[in-house]
Length: 394
Image (cartoon, rainbow, N blue to C red; front, side, top):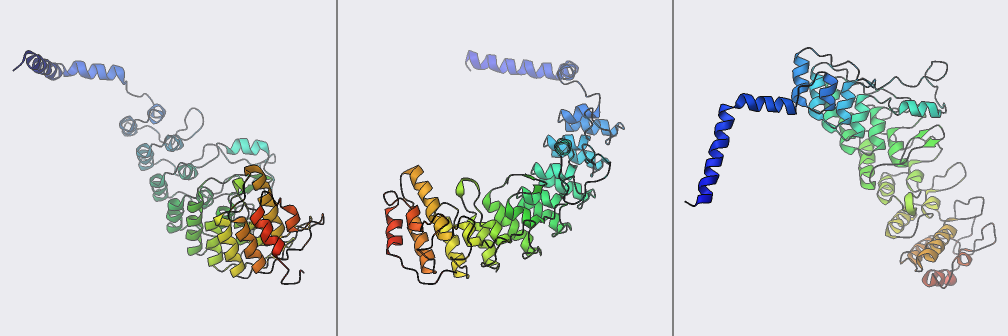
């Protein structure tokens, strides 16, 4: 055996002997490095389940508020510490605890339906979430299940009038939506502003007075969440708070001019009326044609036309119809990218084949062809140049 191997073996034996004979020293060193927590709040904030368990067994109050006024249960959930949250719940922590009371307004009463939430209310609500809502936002399905087992209130509303199901729909947490529905969450319960969970996930956000909160959640997750709500009996044909139908809402462009193909196709397949209009007479097809030309938009437009959408219906105050907007959107995109979209000409062909009037003029007296730049969009311009109206324009 080499000298190095002997030395290493001796060192190992020495360390082992020291550990066995000096375990008290080791314990004292560990205690100095990791001193026991004096309060339950300290243990929760340190994410130390063993100390939390020790202090609970010693009689610590699990419902005592932290120094910032937040329940310890919410601190544990915000720290993504599911074991500590479970320990607190098993010890009797209030599953409906909130960080602060809901904003009640200057008169001390809850705001009525349609009440415009003030900036003071928004600042207050930033910390006025219950434990169930925080767990949903943090994507903690296991903690949501623990809270429901502890009898958390499925109908609890915050100042915006959102229940846990509305929160889960807003963030497109499909697995949590499924859990809430299985535990008895009312699928068509409305917020204080009249929105259902299905409307929230289809429209991509929830309204709070004049404030619109952006949509967080990927498109496929939102489609799956909407399908789940529909399969549990959500009302597809209830008018939305803005007067639109769900299909019209789904066909409106989102960020970067993209269309939510999967959401729109889901609602078309569910049989929603493709000819329904808004109070201004605008259709789902008219809104869809505001999106930039791509394969997704082409798929939706073809589906809408196949289910009875009329390309000449819908005209805004500028006199712009669906075909005008396809050309206007393509003209802007081509000017920006210096190239024509391969799907633009196919979109125009689909609309023309369904009877779109190529000679219809907008409020400025321009036809769809006049909106395009023939040098940047030669194929689309060629299709329009050869087109003749097949149906009289209303």
